[in-house]
Length: 337
Image (cartoon, rainbow, N blue to C red; front, side, top):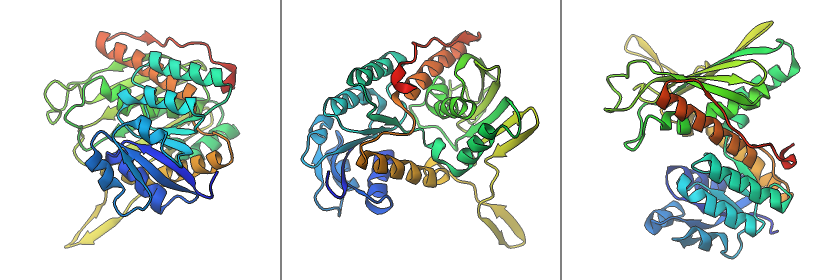
């Protein structure tokens, strides 16, 4: 391995371009040596001014480009499985943005491919595990100081939803982060999902069921409620409160810039996830690079990606039917502990 880990970035959209910038300017120990996107002009723009980066239309070409030692997948989810299997076939460590794949069946195929290799190569981009507040809450809950967690109250709000967003994507895309965070914070699998649908906001696009209240039951008897509201109009907000036997702890209330002017004061509210979780993304990619350079893979696993997909599918079924839906999952392979 060279002094700098050679990374191929797949996808040059909003997320991929930000990772190109992050690797080039913020994260030490790595450099982008190849980028792939069906829109090669967009790919070229993402790496403009960066020497020694090859631009490709096909992900497979970038993965096999000279100098590539690791792969960062930030392409649309439909392209993930093929890219992940190609990277695994070459023995390359991967950081894959969520979701691992579009559904649990394809996610399980990725898990099974990794199991056949007998070692982990894939880390899934559930970056909240690297957020300072979430990490502190995890440490607190694991310490047992507050007793057993009984409830998690979660809030996930976006300014507005993209034009292609559907009602099921509130669960499969937005709430997927809460699925992983709940499993990680509690150390328990989610066993059932119920979705409650209030009257949609007048500001939601026609036909979009927004907001929703998603309820998770866990194997350890905890209950998690998630308010997801992707057209709240005013900002990007994520919050989580753990209610335990001997106390509670809440994150997401930290104050940002307060501006005072003309006899008034107002607080700035983050407008998207790249602002709210900028530090978490930096920590995540830095940890991935450090592990890859050392021949290791840490962080959320392919199994975590599969589990999130399985829970999300149950959630989408609960949204569609209005019923409580049990989560169906395969047996956890020994590779994942």
